[in-house]
Length: 156
Image (cartoon, rainbow, N blue to C red; front, side):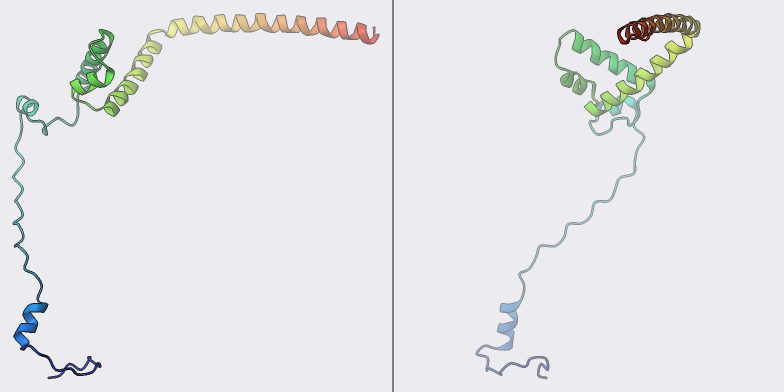
């Protein structure tokens, strides 16, 4: 059967049809590799997790965070290396270090505020007294300026 879609001139072919097919055939590929089946996840103890580089715990407790932060701070203050080296030695990223450091500070500030409620009241009373004293000083200064201007203008 002739190809109906071919509208070009008919030219006689020199080779046999099998020769044409082999020359136009694609190159053969190597077979695909078989997909590996995923192994079931096993429970890993902390001692095993410390030995395996990819089996790090995803979450640290608050105590572990504080210990790592203190360890990093002591390494930096004792000039044992740079901050980056200390962070890498602790096994966390720089971003994690700064997030932990930021999250620890507000907790410390809240504790100080809770402990110093009596001191806050005393500070408030002291600030109010200072505010009154400054207002009186400002009023005296404005009165003095006002009288001086009146004298200059000859309004008195």
